[in-house]
Length: 195
Image 1 (cartoon, rainbow, N blue to C red):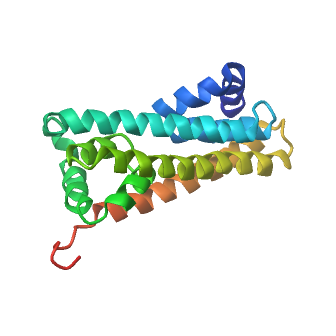
Image 2 (cartoon, rainbow, N blue to C red):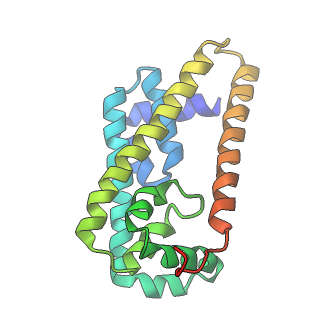
């Protein structure tokens, strides 16, 4: 089964798979690492640490790229101009909230830190709140994987039908959350005079 195979891969390559996986795949790697921790293939506190470090490192690198090359990169992304404009309009008033929360925002996981970097936010401020955001993100996503696995373990674990039903439920929950965030991010920003 797919989930079982992925958790075995995480377990085989250990915490480095969690670290690099969260840098590249983000939520999927953190979630699956939580599943692996519940199955005692990995130690839960270490999974939280390595997932947080992967997310923090990824966002820090993207911020740095945005800080030095942001305008050139963003100009080449016409498809994302609505997201870019929205973040650019909000960044002056909501710096801390955006730094911490951008990793949770649908469609902004990669481009968000680049936009923040291009706004020339103080790097020390970014790195400090990025650490806080990475810790929160890791705690939530890894724990969701851990809890999802603990729920599925009560069911007849070997049955492919049960795994399929469980994964469909989890996938539907994720899609509903993404749809909610997508609607929230697409709302037209109000005038900055009213904020």
